[in-house]
Length: 194
Image (cartoon, rainbow, N blue to C red):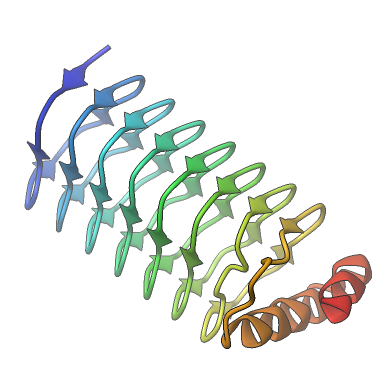
């Protein structure tokens, strides 16, 4: 298991083979800003204690973040995932943004937990996408998000905030619209009631 203390700076790094950070522990911030992953990127069970920056990172093959833990903020803004992306059972404890990211293949957020703001505005999902059994402790923002293939929302759980923000109604309307498009009548009714 690799351990990184302080700032782990992989900005602009080019990983030509498999980049294996599985079970790694980043005790400070981790920057993969504009990093290029030509081979598979493996972050299985990786622990990020500080903020994690994957802004404009390019994943040419599979990106595996299964059971990773992000304790700080997680920034995947404008990241490009050309292969499959797997965030199964990933824990996002801080602010999380995938704003304007591109997912070209299958994307899984099954059983993922988002404890803070989850921003998916402007994301383009070209492959099938699943949020099955995922949990959001704040209303996620899917406004201006495009889904080209099937979206699975089965079992998604969104906690109604104690104090709603002005944009929360828009976020729930968008979730209801996504449920209608996915033909998930249970979620449609759930988001309609909220």
